[in-house]
Length: 161
Image (tube, rainbow, N blue to C red; front, top):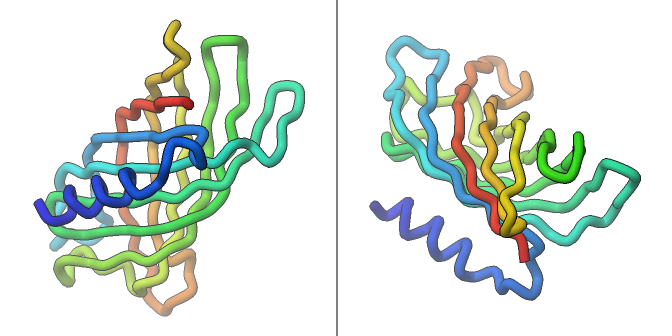
């Protein structure tokens, strides 16, 4: 519960004037260790207005908090991109280095340093908001001697300002 409150505080602390998008997600995770405590997770992201906009691609800065029901928490910041197929369908991707706090030895990713990679496909609603399905992978990117990871699948809701 305290992690859900932390996510709520993170999202609430960013004013709508400084954010282009808020993204809230729910999903399930699978750690690579057989002794891991797998389960559900919630995520909250804040995306800036794009710093680059091309014909079909835009890139922005983003921050993320992932909280697993097992007690694991990831906090990171990085870059996000959207590639539009058309006015409704898009592909999204992001990379966010950050801090991972493991709740148990089975969920340890080998280092508190972690990188979260995301790839998803989404659909824009008539309101301008969107729904997407995304997969993520978190690991320490071989920066430590041991490099297990965790994969997750998320159903995401993006609210644009």
